[in-house]
Amino acid sequence: MAARKYLYVPPKQPESMVISFTLLCTSDGAESHEELSFAPPPDTIGEIMERLQSEFSIPKCLQTITTSCDQQLSKSDTLKRLYLRTGDHLTVRFLARADVEEIKGLV
Picture (cartoon, rainbow, N blue to C red):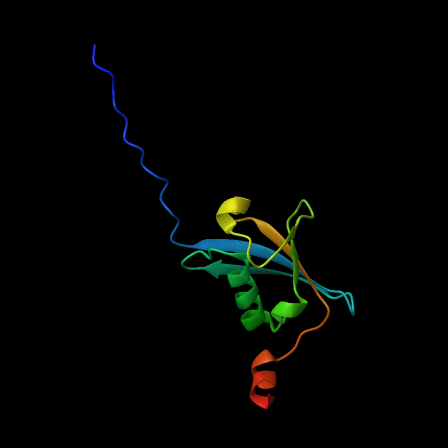
């Protein structure tokens, strides 16, 4: 009897991803819950930080992102390594909001 050969088919990458966030301002205690849709899904936490900066005026340098297990993430962490999927939740702690685009114009 001949051995069967199996062809490996890698899992299909999703076309979009939705991540929910808890945004916590450490200076005034303000808390909000937001959801962002990414199409195509980001590859790294750094890409998520960029989007949070543009959507919610939270400078990347002030963001601390953690998982539900309180694992602190760095901008170079990949979503593939973290097994982050659509519907997952991240917590973002930050000191203050700022209009980054306006500040860039002054420099």
